[in-house]
Length: 477
Image (cartoon, rainbow, N blue to C red; front, side, top):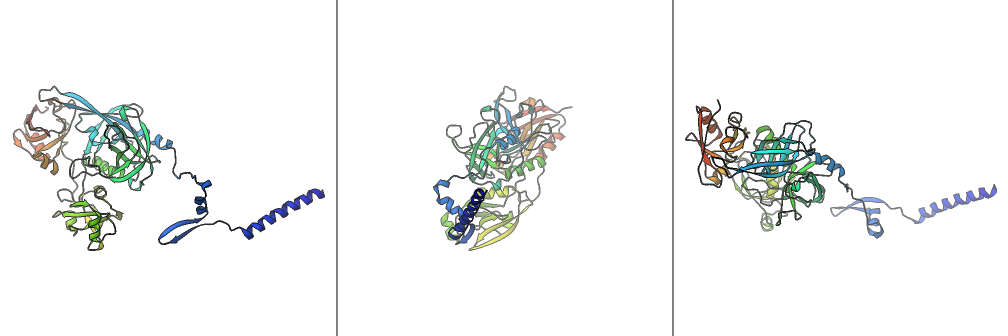
């Protein structure tokens, strides 16, 4: 018994002695934040860890598997097959060709977002879901300036993805690209965000918006219109392009930011057309020499080189030579970023614009306008003849009028098995006259067709062709 008691006392004494020696000679490591010279750094234990080669491996704070994100996104990505009838004339003889791509279900009642170039000029659109159900889709509207199109299928309770905040996406962040490359069923690839605000000059027209998210996730033909999602499975972009010399993926892919997609989808769903807002200025990127001459600390910002009379910027007092450096407290570094930020608003909405003038930072509240310097919301027109004749019309934009040198209206869609479809008229046909009467707007075209007694003769042109086309048919009833 005395033996065990002595052993216990020795153990306790040894422990107490160890604690006493440690407290006298060893300094405990502390983890503190220190601030000096405008730079915050972590000292103490973390410094020792980084100095030690034996402690050089750390776990990433982000997930290194993407199972949950893939399980969320994959059921909501669809295959799109768009049929295009080409080579025909008023006597028929056209051939059907097809283009394929991907789309993303963004609401459970069947709204699907894809690329404009996937369904452009198509006469028949088929959508195949992840569970292999196939539907005929209706084209709600398209926006070539952002390469976005909105489709609708008649179904409920579909799996869908929610919009994430593309502004919060950071370079280096893991992302997944989900689509149908080479007509394979939903394929998931992973990569990181390589850059933001990329302009690669693939969209035509002065009003186009290119401020892409660049990734190194593998994107191939058929991925166009597919989903770019973060590791939470939220939609942060719609895949639209790759840079390639071979026709296949070579390391660079680009997606339209989800914040811009969301705005365009909302416009197309509510109005059938995009409500584009403009500052009413000509802009260019800064260079270091110009920035230095203006007294700016760096070359980030957008130089205004022209201010349109009666435009939004003119009303707010902005001048040529001003440098836009922020919109609604968001820093602006390039023309592509400024176009994207402004493109998220509608005419009549106001934004706070920070700009540099005379060595000072100024701020103005600007009420945005449309291309015609109006603050009114445009209403979709041209579908009044959809039920009776089977086609929808829209007005030509100013850029289209200038490029085509035509006054008229454009056929935006043609319904299969309709009166107009039987004439072999194609979407994209520009109507310049109805029964010999010149027309310049949708209202004029609709009025002329509705007032005609029975026979209709529509004359006009297709872009890139000099021949005049004439389509003649009888109204129903």
